[in-house]
Amino acid sequence: MDRIPEPELMVEKEQVISYDEADFSEGEVNLINQINHYFLRKNVSLSEKDLIVDLGCGPGNISEKLAINWPNTEVVGIDGSKEMILRAEYNKNISTNQKKLKNLRYICSDIKDIKSNNFFLDRDISLLVSNSLIHHITNLEDFFNTIRSLSSNITVNFHKDLKRPLDEKSALELKAQCSTKYNEILTNDYYASLRASYTFKELKNFTLENDLSSLDVFEDGDNYLIVYGNV
Ligand SMILES: C[S@@+](CC[C@H](N)C(=O)[O-])C[C@H]1O[C@@H](n2cnc3c(N)ncnc32)[C@H](O)[C@@H]1O
Image (cartoon, rainbow, N blue to C red; front, side, top):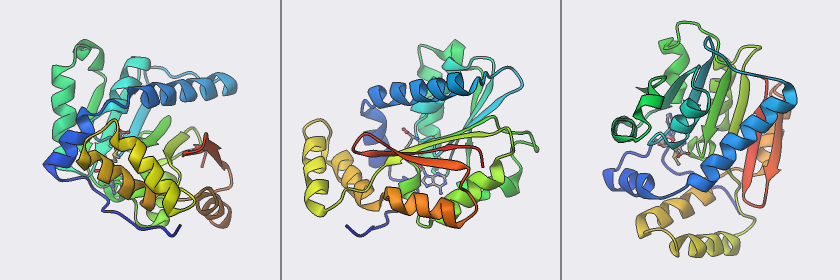
């Protein structure tokens, strides 16, 4: 199936609310466990001086879990959509875990502008994360240029996203499954996301052809891809 790009930023209020109200907690907990697993394997531990950045943080579900899981670090969630950042701030303020989120802050910025704005005052990022972001990015160069420019030799990258289905029939089956759990707006967004996603081959070839082969690209189950490692 050919890739059909979708708009990068999620800016519509109804779209933001539908996304925020859906329960993706199983996948989110899974992602934190996967990062923990890799850290254990590589003997990495994070402490006070460490900075974690969540790119395309949306309403902050992953950012909050990162902040709670690594309470001694500083966590920054970044999204280019003002509406999403407002939602993330709101969620942080009403959270029953509010006291545990003091190490979390949000910035509204397109990922392509982060480096030039020097938000981190040249501090090294220890963990650079994204979930369900890559498929939004129209050109893969923009995503990989961003993570390359934000990474230093200590940065562990962990980026998880949807994998593009093989054909339209498979995409429609996944859409139908989604519609049993979520509303129409979210179901349509999910279908658009599936069609905008990249394939394993596209991500892998990009890393090989652009001097990024230290990044591992692998399939996670039938429907997800992970980009992991140092740049
Ligand atoms: C599908 S949501 C994922 C949100 C969150 N990471 C999660 O897993 O719940 C994708 C988010 O990426 C943001 N986004 C897309 N393109 C972006 C860009 N170029 N710069 C910054 N944020 C972007 C969108 O606005 C949206 O909030």
